[in-house]
Image (cartoon, rainbow, N blue to C red; front, side):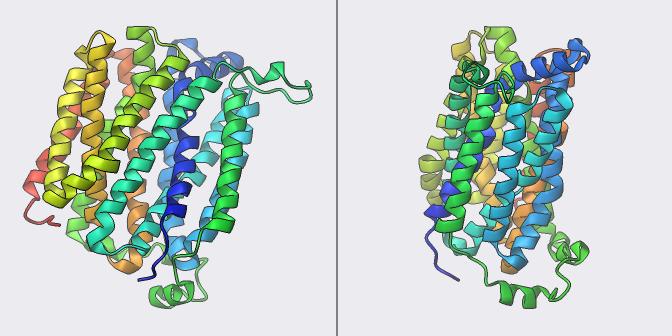
Length: 414
């Protein structure tokens, strides 16, 4: 196994998550502006926001295994470079979007380029052995958490800036264009960091020979020749991961609306609340998880995490005032911080070493599929049924994942 310093890829992941998190506190207000500008039905703002979130995830779903598999053949670095260049374009489009459709296109591009997280996770798998992989997947999770802290935090801070007040008038930005420009700048830094600071982790010549696609690597069907789908252990893990992500992502879809409706929080305060959630996840995955994984099996940690998620989702809709809602968020953050890296690590361990990119890509695709479904189910039930419905649906989904973990415990071992 090739020994490479891992901190450069950690920084790549951090920059990716920072850019992703910037939109969270303003998605509510930005959607309302774009819908009004486009003459769309004003009675379904939350649903339109759900479509924006779902479109991002749909294209991330499609391209995660493709980018992961192509990176198995051509190398991680070149795929990261190309995808980050696409991110820069998407964020610049975001900053000048004046109508809903144009912004929707920018989110589609972001989804395609955001599929590179599977490549980054594959880089970790390339450069770690099975014994230490859980620890480093936990560190990646902590970096996700830090990005989740600073992204919404900076998004909230920048939400008060109307960049048109400082421009020349030659280019018209939208109300939250400052966030798009800032995120594009972060992506440019990320691009240069990948080019000059990241070492390739894949022997591409050997990979092509092993996968047997020499001279035919443009054939997507051959690139996606997925032998590991026949692995029943990995199949179960994909389903468990999907149910967990589907349940958890409901809160990402409706929390901004819930915070406004129940607690009258503005975009800036919403950013702070999401940052608080990110702090808890970073503490769990950066410190607590690393201690727990030394004492307990990964499958048991997955089970405990699912239980905590179920409890958190049951409590969330009845948590009032906001201090009790914050306690529910702590339970949810701890549950996700324990369960998600555990499931990912077991899947990595149980997969062939030559297909780590594909494995991580499929996992990311299941996560993306959950983000295609959850924004729609969450916002529709929130608007049409009642505000607590998305949380109770999440509790049911997490219960299903827990049952599957328990029933498969003998087969899915770590």
